[in-house]
Image (cartoon, rainbow, N blue to C red; front, side, top):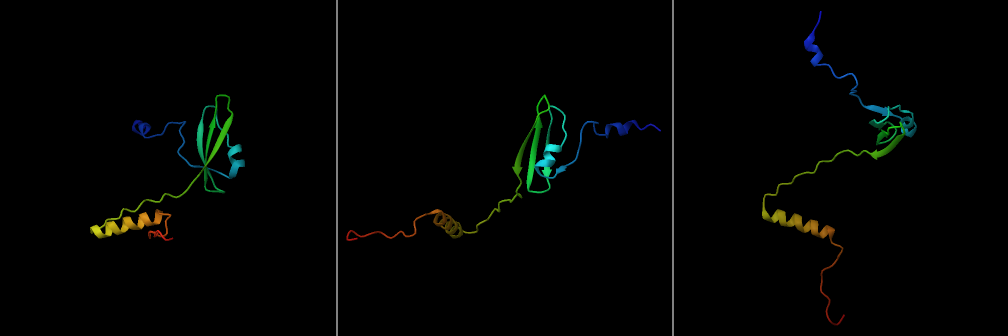
Length: 108
């Protein structure tokens, strides 16, 4: 049986849809690539992803990038003006290097 509508659902032959995992720099160096190509390789020994690129002659360049989990910022809703002012004062005081704001007298 011939199913011509399935041809539209198939991925192109040259395109891969997978995560490539390697073991350290040695695994990155052993990974085979065609000239003028690039790949992201996930290191299983550390929290690193490697950007590996080859030039026209097939020479490989690999650059490591650290992976850190994404932390979304919490959006705080303040109900009153007093809460907003108190939060601003805390932020300013935390950034300030001055421990005391008392004035010196002329006799000191």
